[in-house]
Image (cartoon, rainbow, N blue to C red):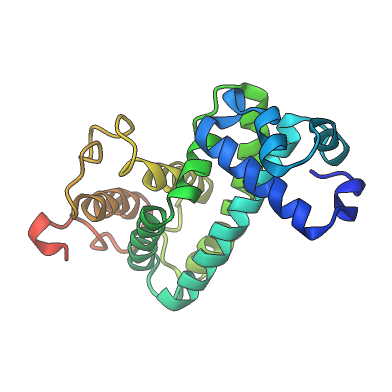
Length: 228
């Protein structure tokens, strides 16, 4: 995370560095992203970046945090609009639909999410995914806990396993409908307009079958003609 010096930098320079770093990491990821390019685009000396961040990985994690905060702020608004007090798997279906639509409309955020999710450098991936997972879990855990209190899940449901599966599903649905090669199974490699919604319902049906207290909830995926 940023050094104390970062806090003393004027807002315009901070914004320029963030914008340049997001563009570079979004286009090239961590491994191929260039600090030289970031510094040049931001109009600062490369050495200045090391006054603000411990190293390139630290900057990458900071950019992931900034992007995650934007996504989280938007999705928390949508969560309230979708009424999370409803039966959990009904709510989850609508939330995942909104999630997929968000990344369709925000290619910049999608590129940054891809850079974090697909990074090959192990240390960088751990750094950045730990930041993203923190945001995911700070949102997911209260929702799941409230649903558990309402009795939406089986008494013997493994809640940690469900959270782990959700940590796989959310990033997958953020990227797979828009990046070929990530999901040849659910038809997301070359999706029709209705295919992401069908994939959401199939995935939620599997979760509901495994964890729901009501075995009839989302017991079957919708057919294509049922998705509007």
